[in-house]
Length: 352
Ligand code: RIB
Image (cartoon, rainbow, N blue to C red; front, side):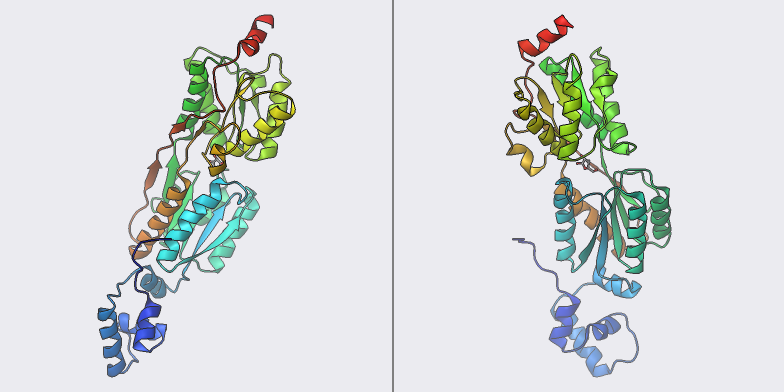
């Protein structure tokens, strides 16, 4: 339960003064057509309840709805429920609600949903998209020109009024790969994030950079295309285990992929981390509960959602303020799914 004080809403004022919300808004904006008596009563109620102009008032002014559009790639990826929760909790505190759309990383769905949100005249947009979608960027730019607040995640800043939630994917991938190298692994595989996206580009780059720094080369067979689902992890690990010699450690695209890889390895009769170390990305709640708990990079998803909605509210209050790049730290969390390579698994290298 939240312990933050509840803000007085326009509905509270309307109820206390026994008038409609529109009347409160009209008094607030000094509009004509209200009797002096009513105007005075509303004014006194506004003062008594300490009602302050906020996003709600601005929304009424701009005739926007009290809804914020949230477009994410996949609600089944546990990264996003926490992210959306952060948005929603903050929105709720300020009398906003959210309109949630799931794009499945389908570019035409992304465009269609943004058009739909526009028709609903939402007060602001939080858009998580990873693939270069020019159509989406065009819409976000138009919205920014109209001073509609936009926050994006996973993409570049398309306009100076857009706020970007930024995490250093390349560095995260570099650090988790370096952790495996420091444990003594020399044959390290990668199950990649969805092809063609920025996350894939940056994380693959971080993985390669860590290997290069250690004087190792990224073997083509050890980099397999993947995605962000359990099935991607199962498929990816099967492919990697079929390579001779197989990797002794694998960097998975995210924790769900790591879970898929661990379950498939168990089915093959292999031990994690005894035979193969597995590392994930995200630090979803489940990553600490599975057996073994997953070594991962922690992304502050709830906080990111809160900051996204905070930025939207800021721009509703002050439509001229420019966007920002908000950086989030993504620390490495070491758990039981990674360990030194066993003598047996490294011995295979000698034979090959
Ligand atoms: O695509 C957004 C996020 O979902 C990524 O950062 C990734 O780790 C995933 O699970």
